[in-house]
Image (cartoon, rainbow, N blue to C red; front, side, top):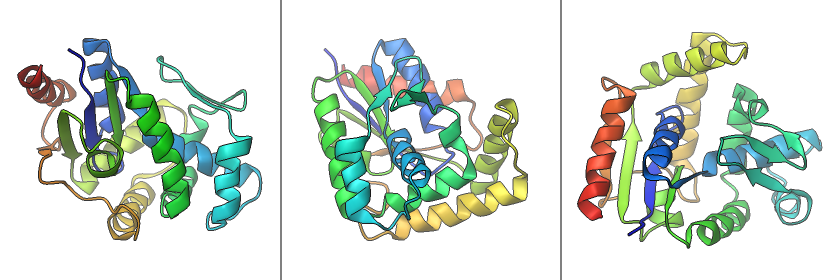
Length: 219
């Protein structure tokens, strides 16, 4: 029996890392919806657009974006490897801006639902439990303190050779938290049927074990 796993939570909570590990353990596919919004933001900025040009952004998604999310985690957009290019603070904030746009969300959600309809997917993002996969068999709201998330993001950036400092990253995370939780379309919040996990004082393996227990109970 194959199921779908929905993981919601704020930026930097470890959703992608946890999802990657779960995907390998279960032989599932990790669908990183945040990367999809980042890719849209990256392509939009590359084309000189402002992130509030909704019709033009939607047009890019539907007619000018060939996006491939590979099982190994690499992300290819129009033949260009953007895996690391979309992880900068600039792209993070632009992705938050573009995710506010109703028709942009509608276009990407439709893509995500079609992909996950076959089951066997781990889908992470910010409105997965309620909007993208409301019928997911396992739902998780993964969070951590803003300070802890900033420290993790700084270490990740340093490992990837991305410039940045702790205070700037923390400020960006707090700003994005506010934007994501106060946007008009699909604001970030925990649904009643999702299991809340605060990873601030947990190791990656401990978080994975908690979610695996939820999955095994369903299977």
